[in-house]
Length: 272
Ligand SMILES: C[S@@+](CC[C@H](N)C(=O)[O-])C[C@H]1O[C@@H](n2cnc3c(N)ncnc32)[C@H](O)[C@@H]1O
Picture 1 (spheres, rainbow, N blue to C red):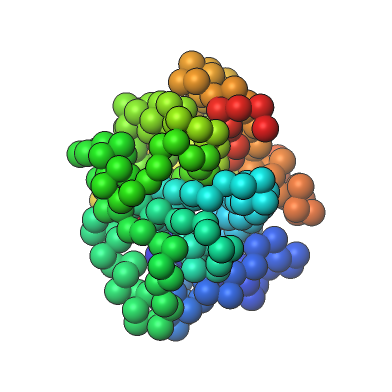
Picture 2: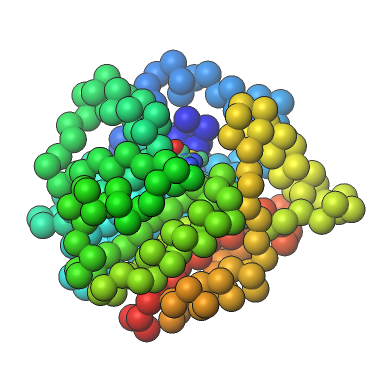
């Protein structure tokens, strides 16, 4: 809900708007849109920066999806989909969307879609999977995912909630795809325990908040670690953007330049 609300609020609050999603507000509903509990007491500048990164990563994933579909990719897998609305906005003929999520979250989302009157098109297949308990291979096979056809995996705002082993298993599963595969995901940099940087302090405070609601961050990487992990898993091409670089690409200059915080990766198994 926190990230879905950030996307919804971005539609009205931010200039320039980097991500357009006409369903963002509908899927969360009026009362949750107004509640804003996750940003209460947070420095407004940092809340805006976080919101812009959430919007920018969705825009980036949408742009990658558009290029992949134009190239002929017909399978898009959204890992840890949450209230992501990509599958309900993209109606390109013949493209299948697989929404993978924890069974509890997925049930909650289906309730939200129905309350909001957002129809689930036949192109969407739900695959309930707990990444820590069962394999993506089994869950996606059961959902009819074709390992011999090109696929794009969108994995936003999830890696930090998983153990290193689950992250590793998922990347290897994607790299072992029988056709071209690409993935877009974000990850968090470890914060230096001695840093007094304002943004690093905010990341620590946010870590405490998510842990307090029972969803602690478990994984942190540096760009070098992620690159090494992707290349050893079988990826051939890795593009890594810090939040600052990503926002700059969309015309947004942050008030502070920081190394901590999220990074966004686009990696592929072939040099396409
Ligand atoms: C912060 S939300 C991001 C949701 C969505 N990708 C977005 O950007 O709006 C984290 C997502 O990870 C999923 N998740 C966390 N741990 C999981 C697990 N062990 N198995 C499956 N999904 C998990 C949650 O259900 C949730 O949908």
